[in-house]
Every structure is written in structure tokens, then in C-alpha cells.
Length: 532
Image (cartoon, rainbow, N blue to C red; front, side, top):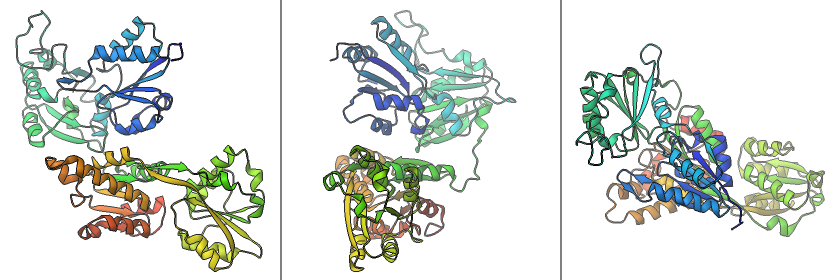
């Protein structure tokens, strides 16, 4: 304890897509010492806090409040009084049916400083993601956002006034049937029949367009269309479950989603290190795909560079086989108190354009890059450039292939290599990826170690589901319904995947012709080793 009161930040996490978290929200997650989060928060956001941040789940399911609102308020006050930076992460926007106002009043009562960070609300964003404009000049000149929950519960049958004098939910929604514009109901899936019945009693036509958007903006998004006459039946047929937004009005007949993008309608999972996963995911999104990025590999620096502490004047060439190697090298160089002057007499070789770009961001242009982006081509190309007395230094992942130095040594070139970083599995993100397997049509792999992390997570899930896991056990079993497309960045990655998969699934594997992020994207598109 510091003796000083900490601060509380109420942060809106948005409707589900982690990319819709605000910049301010992302900054505060990095600073958080305590994180209180809801059920509807994208679990990948939890990985943005530091490892020593205390994470507390305070989510609520319909009819199942594991932690009461009073307890949440008390927790916020208690943790702030410990002098800590507390982030209260709430789905959507804190002040849109998120009970953020109650939490703020509790903080004000106790004199705790706070800040409210707005979030994107699902009442608008989920509809937009499904192609429904909440307003439209010719058909919907207003919109109304309504919660189906009340202080007494949802829209269930019962008297209009409860025993304690509080108005019950029955009949509460009848007046909305006379309203023009778009009606948006949050938290109403469980009471959909009652909602529809009351809107019809209030004057809405049975032919009024209606739609349900389930898990809007996420990889699992579904849209179910109908009218007030048919929507309840269709919801049952499709097994719609919360969270879902119920929308009623002429706007619900629109489907304003472009189908002209090359990857429209595709749902693609992306693995790799954070840098690689982000690069591939961004490119796929630009082409219209819905993407679930799961960077299930973490970059961990080693002590090799610090222990060796090379005199870079002894080396003619510094050779990098990945952008991660470039980033780690310069970060570690800085930590050791050295700057770019130590590299004044070195030339630089890189395996491909991504690595070259990372080097250029550090202020150095690559002197050599092979036409084929492979370790073999890099080794042979740099060997051909070697002059008398040249000495090469390879800076790579600790677990990477030693093919570079083996080729150099056969060519009689003096060389050395250092494993300056290693990759470690991020089990939490790998496990989360497996939960999406039943909706993905494509999955990309950027390294053999990424394949191993993914397959290990699959084994964990198969065991966790047990004999009573039903559908989950089927999905998570290695022989279960894998995506139809499994895209690998290179043959080493392909070999690792084949080692872990049954032979009957090998025909789903394609290897990118170009061993880069761009190559992975092209393979997903159907070109250069991809799928027709």
C-alpha cells in the first residue's frame, strides 16, 4: 500500500471486436494494476495488461450474478484505496445500460478520483457490422435504444405492478409499438416472445421488418432476418443466444455490406508472434475477411547478446532472418548502452522485405536481400559476396535452424551466430483460438513453433472437454472439424503441421510460395500456392 488513494478508470471495451477499443482505453490497460472485467469483454484484451496486474472477473450471466453490483462497487473503492491504478473494463459503453453511473456514484460518495472512457456501443456498432443502418433518411429518422431488463427483471408475464409497488415488465414495452424509427433492444433474447407480443399490442404491424444480430462485430457474428410475425420462430430455429441485439423497423430490411471484396464472407484465424499476426490480420481485413487474430507466440529475449557482448568492428556482415531478430537486436543494444555508432563498419543482410523494413525503421538500409526469401538463399547469396577476411554474425531465434552457419562454414567463411531471442507459447491466446474453430474456414501459421503451440492447445482442450464434452469435444479433437484451409508460411511449418495432424487432413494444407506475410495473404486469396 502506498498510503495514497489510487484512481479508477471506467473503460468501455466496445461491442466485441478488439480493434474497436479506443486508443485511450488501450493506454489505460497497459497501466492497470487491477483489472475488473465483464463477461462480454473480448478475452484477448486481457492479454494487454502487465503480467503482474491483478485480474478480477465480475461478469454476470442472465439470472446468475456471481458478483453483485454492490460488491463490484466495494471492490472498486477497496482497490483504489490501496493506492493502485484500477481499470473497470466494461463491454460496450459504460453509460449505455452498463451500470457505470451506479459505479461512478459509489466512487464519488467515497471521494475516489475517476475517469470515464467512452466505448463503442453495440446498439449501433453491431447493427452497422451486420449492414443495418440505425437511421436512414427515407425510412428511419430516429432510433430508440431500450433495455429489456428492468429493476424487476426482464419482460416476463405478471402483474403490471409488483408487490413492492415497482412497475413490473409486463406491458412496459407496449408503448414502443407506436413509435416511429428504429427500435433497438439490448439484453432481450431470453424474452423475445414477450417483447414481440407487446410491440404488436402497441400497434406495430406483424409485417414490420425485424432482425437479430448475435455477437456483433466478432468472428462469430450472425444475422437472423425476419418480421415481427416470424422472428421468434427463426430465432428458435437458429438457436440464437445472448449476447444479441434485437432490431425492429424498416431499417432492419437493409443489408448494406459490400460483397465486392476478394475475401468477403471468409472467416480466418491468424497465428504467430504479435508483429506477424497483426501484419497478416490487417492485410486480410483490408481484403474483406473477418479475422480472429491469436498471436499465440510471445517473444522472449535471451542473455546471449549481453553475455557475448561482441565487438562489432570484428564483423563485416550482420545477418537477420526475421523482423523479430531486428527488433530484439536493437532493443538489447540500447539496453547495453550502445548506439548505432558501434555498427559503423557493418553491412546488413536480411531474409526478406518484412525484415528489411524493420531494419529501415531502425535507420539502416539492407545491403543484401535474396530474390527467394529462404534461409538457404540468404546463406548462399551472402556467401557469394564474402571477401577475404570477412566475418559474419547471424542474429536469430534461439530455436531457429542452423542452416545459415552450416552453409557459411562449408564455404570456408568465418562466422558466428547468436540466439538473441526465443519464442514461447502464449497458452491463453492459443486456448482462445480453439474456441473459434467451429466458425473458421481458414487458419494461417507463420512458424513451426506456432504450429506446436496451437496443437498443444488442442490437446489441452480435448482433455478439458472430457467424455461429457459433447459438441465441444468433437470440435476440439484433433480429428474434428478443422478449417477447410490451413495455410503455412514455409515447408518447415508445413512439416510441423503434418506431424500433428491425421493424414486425411493433409489435403487441406497449402504452403505460401513466398515465405512472408504477403505470401500468406496471397495463399489465402487463392494465388501462389493458395486455394482455388
